[in-house]
Length: 139
Ligand SMILES: [Zn+2]
Ligand SMILES: [Zn+2]
Image 1: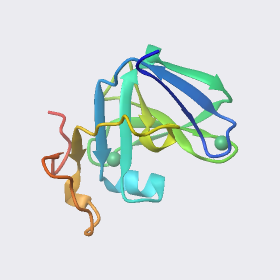
Image 2: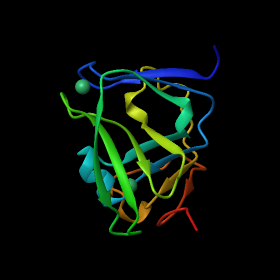
Image 3: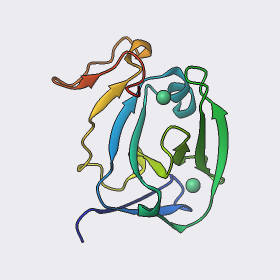
C-alpha cells in the first residue's frame, strides 16, 4: 500500500505504523530538542493522530513546557530503551509527531523547514533552498 510506513525504537519493543502523508515535516534546532535527543536537532514528521497506530509495546509520556512558547509537549518513549518514538504538542491538536529517525526506511522523508535555526550547532550546513526560520514558523 502507498503511504504506509513502519518504524520502532532501538530495542524493538515498540513498533508503529503510520498511513497517509504527513501534514508537516520539520527539523527543529531548539535547545530542548538538542537536549532531549542528545544530538544536534530533532526531526518531526507530523501525522493526524488517527493515522498513527501502535503495533507493539507501550510508550511512556514525559510532558514539559517549552521555555520559548510556554506551550506543552509530551514526548513518548520506550520504557525499555528510552528511544523517543513520537510526541504530541499543544500547538498541533489532533496531530502526532513521529521522530524521523525511528522509521525503518527514511528515504521517503522530505523536510519542509528548519526551525529555531538561531540555536543551530555552528557546523550545521543547511540544504540549498531549505526554508529556514530563526524561531518558530508558527504565527
Ligand atoms: Zn525500546
Ligand atoms: Zn525543538
